[in-house]
Length: 116
Image (cartoon, rainbow, N blue to C red; front, side):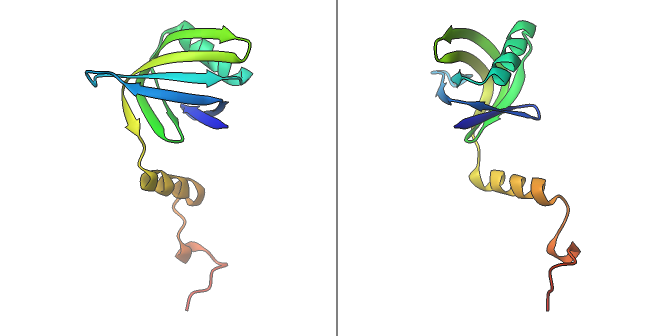
């Protein structure tokens, strides 16, 4: 199962496919959703017409807007267009996750770690 993060909220999705435009001025993505909470958030974004940023495990998208939504028996298929984006750096993402877990804490700050 994959995920997408919109703002501070993370939602489970079935998958995502992404393609760069020929002129490389935007990216088209198709998101497959079977999660009711994610579907509700996507519908809110679609109805409002606002642009938003979102990310997945491998991709980050900036200036995204909804292009179309299709419902079928397996769930929701959402097509979005993003102004820019690309694959995320694995080392940057690793460091970001570590910082989220530890904050400003370092090994010197911890009482339970003994250094000699």
